[in-house]
Length: 502
Figure 1 (cartoon, helix red, strand yellow):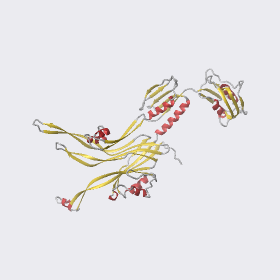
Figure 2 (tube, rainbow, N blue to C red):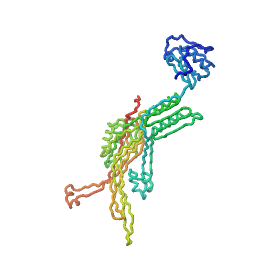
Figure 3 (cartoon, rainbow, N blue to C red):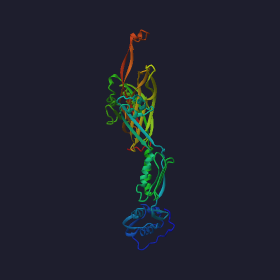
């Protein structure tokens, strides 16, 4: 606190009347840091009942060998009795709210608390992200359902809403909004202006979405946020500034946590003896695949937790290979910040032809049809959508939404004008789940079944290859094959991980 121009540094007189003070003899060259410390000299007794605050402060400064500088605005009465206390403890008891003090270079300075300005830094991108995920289950066909197939899968057009309009559908939608700068603005604004005095009309400019923001009041409080520069400027009382600093540092530590999510998407073509699905009891009983007790659930939607990472995943794959042909579809690795959606997309565009026919009546009354073919792209492949929340206790809560699509077969139809058109029939397997596990553990999601009809040729090996006559010695049959999709997810905290607890 800077000295007031009308207040000089005064020696240590002993004004009359003075409070009753009993102190031990003080060392003549005692430093101010030693005097204010817990190991410094202590007051044996302080009796200051209905005493003037200025008088008590002057006597304390004199007894401890300090000069003093007391602002004239500091007024009031003291009503306290203390025994065996240090100077610091005594000042904490008698200094009223709204007044601050400091001891520096042998001078006790006391004055009213005034607004201070501090600039805080926040290293975060000035960007607002909005993520939307929708699951559409078509219950019946409608006039525009064929076109809606492409829209729901990422093609141009109305998307899930258009699919629903085609004749009825069940839609499950989830939306995540991540705007760190808007959230910090709301919080710091509340800490700075929650007690706006009467008549202090706020002046507010700017808004959310990573844009600059400012707000001031007539009593001098001020908040300026500049996301591009990564700065937050606040003018407020010192105690409020301490609260704001603590909040910003805690907020920054949370949003800058980062997790690496390693995924493995596996398809198991089941043997005929496991046509009802993978027997997870057999997998759980495998000694090399240690699944956490009580962490799994059996049923149509299977979910387990593995404690061991990569070695345990290999052990589970070995156990699964005893029930069918194991094929790894993809092994993506994605990184994500706390509460930020990460998407892994490996798809191929399949073309779907939407055919419309318009009748045309000729001069002789004959009707012909004019066909218009509009190609629409349908993305087929693997999409993994993960939204992680990284806790301070080394736990990761994830919203997991994997989607695996494939071409099952090709459907053909003939338009009214006699043209032959073909379109792929898409198999879709997806799940939407929430999981909570510790960093380094692996969650297994299973139970996603698919049934395919495959054409298998059989016959006498040599004779079925004879031209023209080979068909007499061979036959083609349709065999039903079942496969189950298994997903492994392992999160590892790579930034902002707290110390391991014992």
